[in-house]
View 1 (spheres, helix red, strand yellow):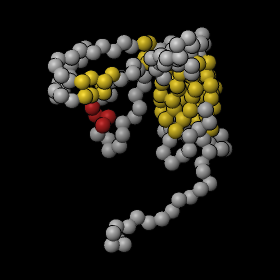
View 2 (tube, one colour; view 1 turned 90 degrees about the vertical axis):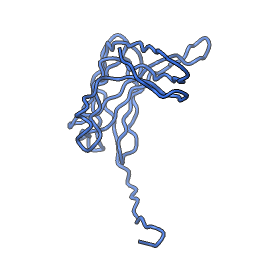
View 3 (cartoon, rainbow, N blue to C red; view 1 turned 180 degrees about the vertical axis):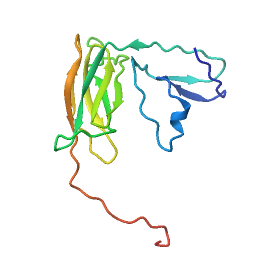
View 4 (cartoon, rainbow, N blue to C red; view 1 turned 135 degrees about the vertical axis):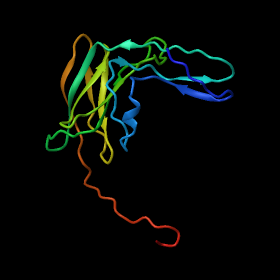
Length: 170
């Protein structure tokens, strides 16, 4: 249970994730991506016009999707952000979207990753600063873990160069 004191007459997006130690924010850069052992629920919009209580339902993950993010020479790429998005996340009868959660992780120094998910089919991809998005792969984690997924990121051959100047040309 957690209690937040929020200002009245404002709107907030409230969500939750794994615990991150306060000390992890003092290293000068962003903290490492935490390891999830559950599927984080979708954030909820809260309009503060009195005391409110919201509940988040956590869903334990029961499957993993593991693999490697590689460059054009098949070398692992560290610190890429890997995401798994549920496929077919809508009701086939009504066409309405369902409340589906995906997963995300960051690659280790050798480019490997592990995503904690629930049974289902996911589109898996990776992104990182200065690189185009990776190839995307479909991973079927229904009834079994998925291993050996390979996501390729190829550096662009285009170079952008120039100078930043103020209004005086400096």
